Length: 132
Image (cartoon, rainbow, N blue to C red; front, top):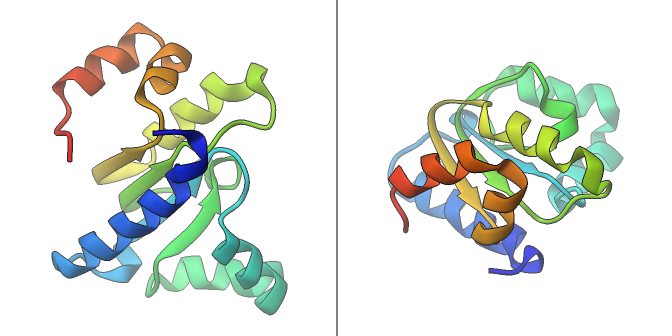
């Protein structure tokens, strides 16, 4: 799957998880490249304080860029690997995104690129992962 399709596929996965019974406040969708359009709209509409109030309220799906999610967690994280602004930071961004889920991590994006950037450890973990 190309980088360009990662956000759309991640959005579909949000819908699937909600249909499976996960609560909206349990889910975060993180992007590695361009910010998700819903994040842009939330920040523009509510401002940064309102946007973060939404995260801490924990009632809705949270959309963020990986860089803004360092040190934070959600029960479920959907990592949309939709490119990288700075390729020299790609491995760090990938690691951060891969380590934010408490229970379920869903990775969406070009697997070969994710494995190349993440290295042998990521490749081995993905080999054991369930593919949907």
